[in-house]
Length: 181
Image (cartoon, rainbow, N blue to C red; front, side):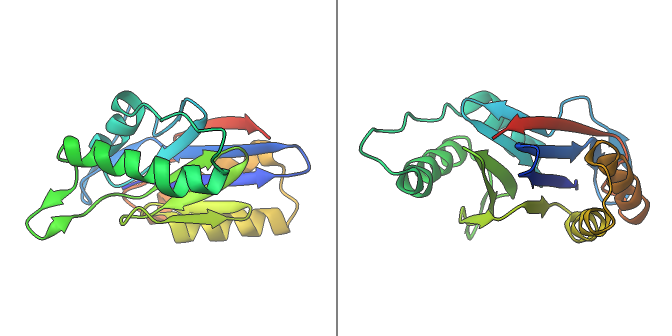
């Protein structure tokens, strides 16, 4: 399900975080009302895999405060990671017989873009991050449009239209956040 895209435009000083509005079981799809991209405290999140995971991150997760003695990396890779793992564990998200199987999401913090994978590893992306069933098509579409000098204001319309034509789990309708650097 889903296509989430983050793009950092350093010239404009903006990170764009976009998420399609599709809900799908792999065979059928519908348009969901609740955006898959949102802000929670100092964090911006775009999620895929599970609506429950997104609802937990948006409504049940209260990001812990960063200690003055902590670096941003220590805060993210230890405090935030452990906080999210605890949230999922306490709410039985991703639990199965062999352990935990979680979802994937993009997390933006202080102008840095991370893809957070199912094992809660944080992979820092330079300027573009994508996740969901449409991630490869979305990355190709955004890179091609950037190469051709596409204007960002219409780039996402084209991107989500193209990816929705390829994947049943992606819609052309999307939500977009603009995050100032």
